[in-house]
Each structure stands twice: as structure tokens, then as C-alpha cells.
Image (tube, rainbow, N blue to C red; front, side):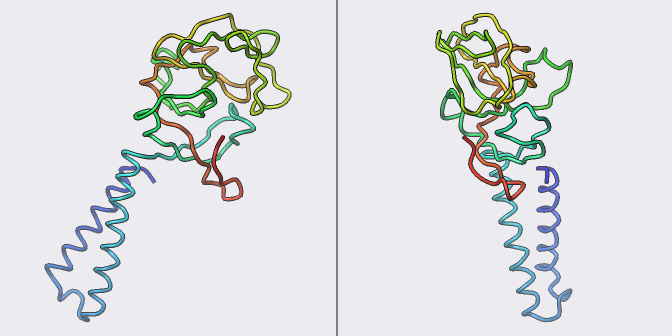
Length: 204
């Protein structure tokens, strides 16, 4: 459900609640009226809380591609903590949702999800099919087995930027293609898979 739809539902229920208050004769039995009012109040309060959470704290995100296999599967739904990078800094290994750099997709504003593999000050290089961070070959357990990382020349991460890569290195369009991602582009940290139920659980 989108934020707009939730606002519309809350508005409709609030109007119904006001109408029942102003025109009690619409519900003849007092007990029934009280029960309806209590139910509507509960839904409205829950909706307001959900709206505040969606707007300020968390958002849901749908996985549209296989670039994060096997960590995230196609059609997974996840919860993203929008406060993670408001009060903290990204860490290597974080799975983050972000706005792609402006010049990346010719007007396509779809948010992306990748893993933070390097932070400001790090030196990154991809060679011999592996990622090297500050001169050390990385043996990351979350990288999809059987994929190759390709080649990327040595580069230092600028202040206020991160380098993002998909776990499915061979099939991911990430910072190797569109460059370093500014911190202000980060939407939040992916924390939890909530659908499908059989895959529900925290992300690592």
C-alpha cells in the first residue's frame, strides 16, 4: 500500500467517524454505535502510526532483479530503516537502498539496492575476478558462488561517497558502471525480509 492510499483510507475513516458523532441517529443502537466508533478509532490511530513510520522511519522495498542473489531473491519484499544513515554512517557490508546518480539511467529514478563494499578513504580494485580492498583480497561469504567480479581499476573512495556492488557480481549494474554513490543518495539500510513468509528474517 502506498503512502497516498494510506492517507486516503485514514481520511475516509475520519469522515465516517465524524459523521457518526454528528448524526448518531444513523446508528440506532447505542452499543452498535460505540462498537463502530471504537473500531474506526483503532483503525485510524493504527493508520496514523503506520503513516508516520512509513514517512520517517521505515519503508518497504521490492526486489526487482537478481543483482543481489543469493542474499535477496527476485520478488522478495524487505523493510528499509530510513534512520540508519541519518544518525549513523554506512559500514562495509551494509545492504543499502539508494537513489542512482543523476546521470546513470537517463531519467529512470528507480531506487537501487546493493551492498556497501568500500567507504570514504578506502582504495578499491577489482582484478583476477576478485575484489581487493586496501590491497587485501576479499573473500566475502555473501558473494554468489560461481560468479566473477570482472575488472575495475584501482580507485580511492572520495569523501562523502561509498562504492556499491551487487552480491551477484557477474549480473549487477553497480558502482563499477555508474561510479561512487554520494552519501546523500542513500535512502536507508535494508534490515529485514518480510515476504514471502518462508524467507522472513533479518538481513546480514
